[in-house]
Image (tube, rainbow, N blue to C red; front, side, top):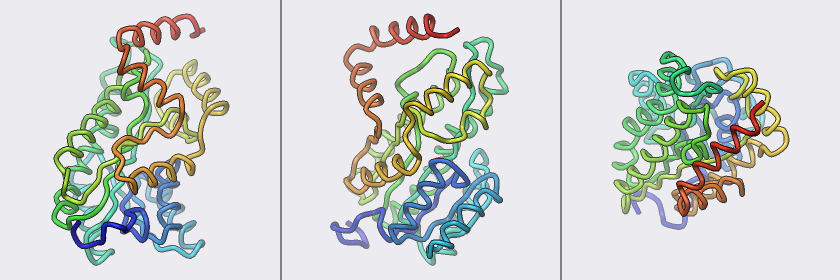
Length: 277
């Protein structure tokens, strides 16, 4: 099991690195890991936002460090790993590739290639860079956990969200592949696939006004809090789970898509067509 006993929960007393920790799910992960006794490196492309998360953790008696990182840039992620190991005095034990953005509301052929590139650079290349840089470190240590934040969009494939769907499907596949490669090493991989979470991803994204209104409504009515999602995901990692689908609708959608994929896809398309104003 490596350096730690098999009874130790990975989320407790962790040396954790989190991307996109300035707000939303990333900030919730950071606060929860600190509450569980961990030291946390909070990275974000907005260092001021990362600093606010760090300030909240320190005010609550925890230990945290803010770091600016653009996950679309491999050099930034490499520098983040070096900084984290220096601050921890050793390897991290938990890495959470969380940074993400949203774009949508337009069909394939109308969504700009610039928006495709922006979403894939952050949502897909971000986790790829994170796994590329941190996996060898954790594998050598023989202990730890990697959480990649995907979405129910990874298998839901709602119309008008192609770039986002593709980026999250890629993150799901990346996580499944990495979990297989790390089997038996003491390093667990968990992929988080929530539906609606009460974050600012819609307001901060490139989403059409009509789709923004619908997403805001669904978040208010059905969205889980980031704190609840983070706690559920960390508990899943502690149980060596691969898939974390914190909401019932995500689990139901996953089951229907796996057993009746053609019917599911047609139904989603028709439902969207008749419910979109």
